[in-house]
Image 1 (cartoon, rainbow, N blue to C red):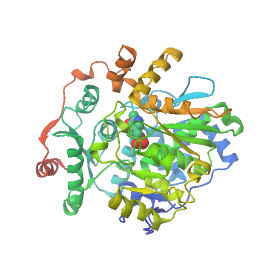
Image 2 (spheres, protein in one colour):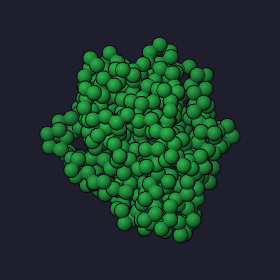
Image 3 (spheres, protein in one colour):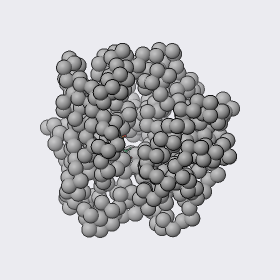
Image 4 (spheres, rainbow, N blue to C red):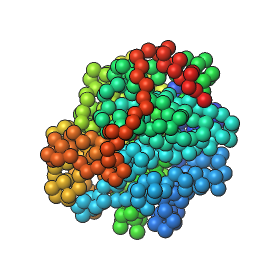
Length: 476
Ligand SMILES: *Cc1c(COP(=O)(O)O)cnc(C)c1O
């Protein structure tokens, strides 16, 4: 399998060439040059593999179609090392929870940090370690986080040979639970840097360092952001695994998915699964008040927000000003026209801050040919949905999942099961759960008292040079 850039660069790249990379050199995102097609026979063979051998072997079957520069036996071993019942707390890895008839939650947040980002990040940690050892290289990951991404990255990379993590976060801005999750890690290769500033300051520092190409090369600086293709690919697997757990899959019937969305990484993996041939009727994009994506699917206008127009909500992991993976879908939508994609995401977004595809003949195909639909949920909807789900089904859901459940109910099709992706556990967003239910969410076993553990964190001013000096002093 070769990979191409959404902006036209066609210099041949294999999976391992782009594994440690972010953007393509032309500023585009990498996609496989085609999506391998899965026929009904393969689908039923994969169903059997998932149900009888487990998630790890299903992951291998799917990943192997996209990766031909890792020997099959090694890739299978990496999948089996990653997706274990011990790490993800159930033999199914992503068990379905039935709420109503034909209405399910797919649990993606039973990994080490209790959010779905573990699903991809845990694999990435093992892939990085494997690839760095093969090349005899090291990598210093520099990141910025306001919550879920940073902790998922740290838990994936902790103790990995050849990898160090320098994770900046805005001092005092994360929930006490999230701070405890990250700062209680004592691994030598994990460095928490609490920056005196807000999340944007952290992001600016990471950008400034990444733009210093000399420094970046010299100190082997890398990132783990959501545009990484390997992360997206890992997420394709759980769309298949979710499907195989429904009765509909026994005879090739269709299902729909609703995906609480921010950077469009999660739902883009659903798009890839559908392009491969997974019988998905609809892919429903659920947003919170930051409704950039809902606006696009309703109107054809993609209008990025500036940071002042980006609201702080009670589903904070969906608080985005632009959806960094969206370019991948638009590239497919416009028939893989790289010149047009480049004009839309390069020239038009930078000069006018939006683009308008409403008059493009392909826009209607977002719904008709690609199965996309969308909806929006607000703080009041979230509280109401958390309450309602608790009252009717005795299940407590987190705020992001609540956005999904609310929007999913508006898109039910007769006879088509709906799977809502559960993207985090409620304990991570305890304050809003208390507001909705008048009581705190349950704490999963193993997380009692984590707020009281010793913390390992370095407080630093929002100063690029000081942070560079810290990285230099501790780099691998
Ligand atoms: C990251 C995240 C999302 C958004 O996922 P995208 O891939 O950015 O669309 C939704 N919910 C939770 C809990 C998250 O951590």
